Image (cartoon, protein in one colour):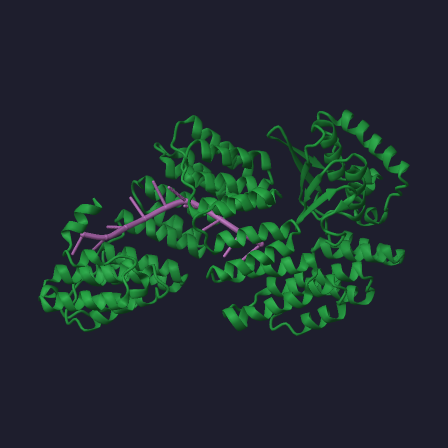
Length: 615
DNA sequence: TTAGGGTTAG
C-alpha cells in the first residue's frame, strides 16, 4: 500500500522523508520549480504534504510555499490542517480552515477537513473552538460521517464533556465498532466506567482494540484487579494480545504493587515475542519501580534501545520512591547528557530524590533551574517538594517563609509537608498554624487532624488531643480504613485494620503472639502515640497489633518461605509504631520486608529501614 | 494523494 502511494508521487518528492533537512528541501524545491513540475496541482499538493508531514521541523517551509500560491487545492489545504493538528502549532489549523472558506476558487471543506480540524480542537483543549467546529460540521452536512463522529466523541471526552459525547453517540443511527469503542473510552475517561462496561458487554463483535480499550479503562480508573481479570478473559477468547494490552496489564500490576503478576506479565511479553516499544518498556520500568524492584527496573532501562522523557522519568521516580536518591540524581545527569530535555514531571522526581537523601542545596538549585534553564513554571507539586525539602532538614522556619512567598495560594499538601516537619522537629506553634491552614482549605482533610493530634500527643498535651478528636467527630472527619495488601503465589490477600475475616486468621493470631513475645524479649515497649489519633477502629480494638501491616507481616512470616522478602502495599502512611515494629521484626526474624506506603517504599532489613526513619 | 477507536512518567 505504502509502495503504491509512493509510486503515485513524483519521484523527486519520494526523496523527502523524516530526516530531510531544510537545505535539502530547498534543493528539491528548486529542482521541481526548474522543471515546472509544481504547476501540476497534484504534484504541488503532494509536495507541500510531504514537506509538512514527514518532518515537523519543516512545516514552516510548507506554510511559506502555500503563502505564495495563488489558488491552493483543497487537498493541499487539508494537508496543512492535518500537519498543524499534529504539530506544536495546532492553532494554525484555523487559519487554513479560513483559507478554504475564503478561497477565490470557492473551495468547500470536506469530511477530511473536519476530521483534521476536530483533531486540532482536541489538541488545543479549546471547548469553544470545538463547539464551533461541531456547528460547522452540521452546517456543511458531515455529521453522518463515521470518521467525523468518532473524532467528535474523542474531542468532547478530552474536554470532559460526557453529555456532549452522549449526544453525538445517540445521534448515530447504527454506530460501528470504532464509534462504540471511542464512546466506551470516552465514558471511562469521564468517570463513568459502568456505562463503558455496558457498552462493551453490548458489543456484538469485539476486536482487539475494543478489548484493549476496556482493559485500559479499568486500569486507569483504579479497577486493577478487574483489568487483569479481563485480560485473562481476552486470552481465553483467543483475541490477539499485543503491546497495547500489555501496557495496561503492567499499569494494573503497578497500581496493585503486585510484583508476582508484574513478573508474569514480563515473561509473557518475552515468551510471546511481543514488541517492546518505548511505551511498553516504560510501563515495565514503572511496574518494577512501583513494586520496589529497582534491580530489574535498571536492567530493563539499560536494555532499551530508545528512551524518551517518560522512560527516564519513570526510572527516576522508581529510584526516588525506593529511597535511592543519589542514583536518581545520577540518572538525571545522564539523561541531560543524552540530550533529553526534562519536564515538570521529571523535576518532581529530581526534587523527591533530593528529599530522600536530604540534599537541600542541590534541591534548591534544581528548583531554580526549572524556570531559569528549562522555562518550566513550577507548579504546586514542586513547591510542595521544596517545603518538604526544608522541613525534613529541620529548616522549619525557612519552610514557612518559602510557603509565605509562594506566587500562588499554597495547597493543603504544602501545609501538610510543613505540618509533618513540625511534628518531627517538634515545632508546635508553626504546626498549629499549618494544621489550621489545611483545615481551612480542606475541612475534611483527615491527615491534618491526625498529624496535629499526633503532635500534641507526643508533647503530652492531652487536652489538645481531645479537642482535635472532638473537632474531627463534630465535622464528621473519618480516617480512611487502613488496608495492607500482600501477594502469595500470585494471590492477593487484603488485610483491613481490625479485620479478622481472613481464613487463616487463627494461625496469623498465633504468629502475632509469637512476634509480640519475641519483641518483648528485645525490650520493645509499644509506642502508644498512634493509638491516640485513630479514633475509629484501632482504638476500639485496643491493640496496635491489629494494624493492617502487622497482620500482613504475620501472614507473610507463616506463608512465605525464609529468604523470600515480604512485600506489602499499604494505602496510608506507615505509623510510628508499625515502623518501629517492622524494623525489629526484620532483625529478629532475619526477613527482608518491603512496604510501599502512600508516598514511598520502606525497605526493612537487619533492623533498619531505608527511609532512615524520616517519612 | 489525505481520515476514525486501544498504550507510558507526578
